[in-house]
Length: 226
Image 1: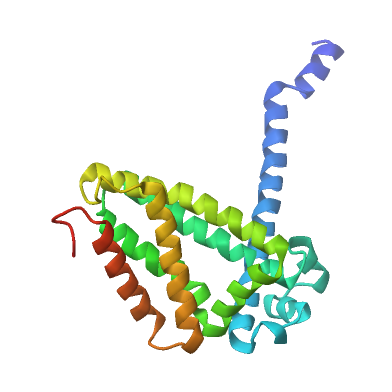
Image 2: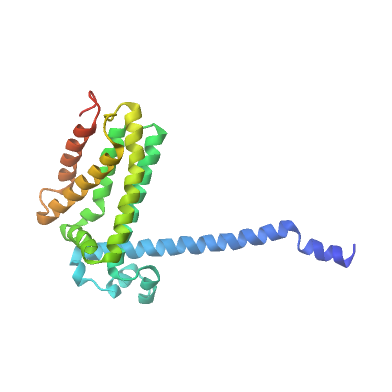
């Protein structure tokens, strides 16, 4: 075998694929670790906001609770206000799960929307103060407001698919506009959480249950109202 052949075998396509796979695996781990750190910071911040109140929490408090270096925080968030923008990403994930569930056909649309109402109220509903802080954040910051508006728009685009499936199945009134239903759903949820945050009573779960029941009765096809 010649030297040229040896060199060729040394850099065979199979070996290059293996090297690329290792590099991709390393990059994938880095991305996963970064995502986990970001979520850890978000969860720690949310808990502190709920316990102490937004103005009484510093970036250092958040990094200590998340067990990361203070400088790490600014690799993921521009300020502590921007942490609240992640909440909308969590909400979008819940909506995405609802869309998948609707297309699977294994559950009723009533059940899917009922669960979605509960999940969307879960994060901002950790405490009345946190709910007020969330609303105040997009009133006070143009940047945060733009992020939240974008996520709300994306959420409406996604949830329209659930309403559409509901109409095809005969569960939702076919005469209603799915786009209008998506907007109404957001208004009902945001309004419910905001009004609850003023006093914290009755329990948010009861408020959400009542709001969902009325919302469903207004959109359900005849014979599907519960």
